[in-house]
Length: 254
Image (cartoon, rainbow, N blue to C red; front, side, top):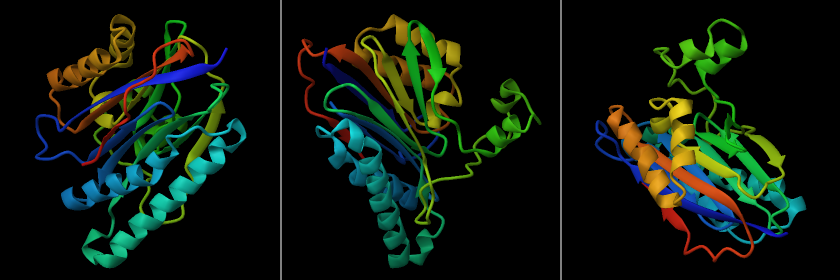
């Protein structure tokens, strides 16, 4: 059976920040979240460059080309950020996270590209799993056994990112998976995952079948937790081909 992807996205600046440095794309073949950093104007620009580089991938792509086209899009984004810094040296240090999921035209495979501390989660058979690994200082401490995952969630340096798209040559993590009907994906910036527990995320993903209502519920949970950062959420379902086609893709740039 041919599988399809259906998605919805919501982004909010939160309750503290004066603007929104996140950018997002949610379409029938591609999901992507980028969280800019490096000062307000530069962070906005970096995340926008990343989404503009990757959004053309929202087309039917052969299974054996998924990782290659993601790698090329990351190369284009990196070059764009580097050029923006060269145009204005005050942008030095700007960058963005990027977490992207690309669905094959047959529905037989998907590929993930990830760098930074935005996240991808998979809800399958009622169990929520974090699929991406944070490129952060505290995750490094967890990996080395210095602190526990619970301690990491409240560590004062949990927002320190160790890798991002900043115009330098970097190697994001790439992986492939076989999708199943009933899978529900969550891609989000750390404005959600830093303030809402995983079990609460899972409960919302299970409770709200409507994609947009689910995404809005997750944003509302982050706002109720104080909304200290920009919040961007993409929720997507893997469905059979008989389900009605998705509306136009959602692309929101800071």
